[in-house]
Image 1 (tube, rainbow, N blue to C red):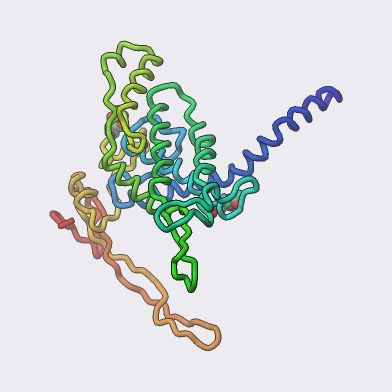
Image 2: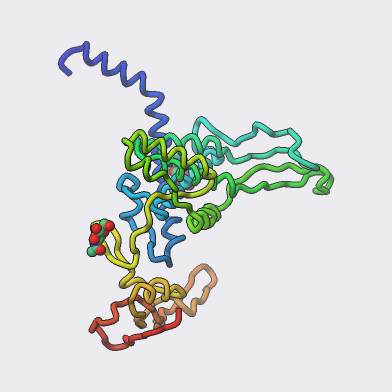
Amino acid sequence: VSSSGSWLFCTYSVWDKLGRFTAYLAYAGSVQVGTQSGIDECKHQFAWDRWNCPDSATQLKGLRRATRETSFVHAISAAGVMYTLTRNCSLGDLDNCGCDVSNNGKIGGRGWLWGGCSDNVDFGETVSKQYVDAQETGQDSRAAVNLHNNEAGRLAVKATMKRVCRCHGMSESCSVKTCWMQLSDFRDVGNYLKNKHNQAQKLDTDKKRMRAGNSADNRGAILDALRSIAPTELIYLEDSPDYCRRNSSMGLYGTEGRECLTSCRRLCQECGLGVEEGRVEVVSSCNCKFHWCCQVNCDRCTQVVVRHTCARRDGNDDSGFRRRHRGHKS
Ligand SMILES: *[C@@H]1O[C@H](CO)[C@@H](O)[C@H](O)[C@H]1NC(C)=O
Ligand SMILES: *[C@@H]1O[C@H](CO)[C@@H](O)[C@H](O)[C@H]1NC(C)=O
């Protein structure tokens, strides 16, 4: 540091921002965990679909398109962050937030009162907006669509919450009942959003206005179109590319080589590929015996399991166990 003046300036500006900065750091780790749980759920939900949530699709900043699938990625990521932060809050992981007890003691409905620890979704929602929506720096139509889908993801967390009750009174006679709102399993949020993905709507914009206008005009046209769609619904702008085919410039792997179970028709045959049956040896523990106390001894067993994969029909890699299955039922 060249002079005490600049050193002072430096410490002052750090001091000013210290509060915000430490808050930022405190949540950043949870935001990362939440984003990852969204991505993991995406991979689970799409494991047997042509598009299987590849890593190339989940780099939020790299999503230059606004397809039905990217709408899901945005929604589940925003939901994952909100969900994780809400959980953190209820578990007392964070200094400055806790359960939502604002209604406790009030009558909630016939025969029950609010009580206990309601999950503080408002807190999770606020942090998710601050971190996830902040990635959308563009002013274009895609940014507007992405923000809508982020919001739809957060609404899914709220829509899947459950009311949980406990009985009180003489020997739990339930003369008094208290209830609170609790997050569902994140799997339920994933299932809910997968359904929204199936029903996603293509945003119908005024094409003439879009073509003639500048980008501000485009955004105006998008915002008009958005007004007609419920905030809970996923929306997209562009039709999905052909997920059957590999296209490395778009980060798409195609379905060749994918394993299929009940999805062979969709993954292989409808993509012009054959279904190949292969046998693989799987080693696992078996015949385990418990010896008092406390030891478990197991044998190692090998089991041959049949796997089906999508393969090009005119390939010439038949070997050993492999057999071609044309017209294999899905
Ligand atoms: C929030 O929860 C996640 C997942 O349960 C955990 O990994 C993370 O460490 C928690 N954050 C804090 C600040 O404790
Ligand atoms: C990959 O996608 C781009 C953009 O849609 C398209 O122009 C190109 O032809 C595709 N390449 C292949 C090999 O399909």
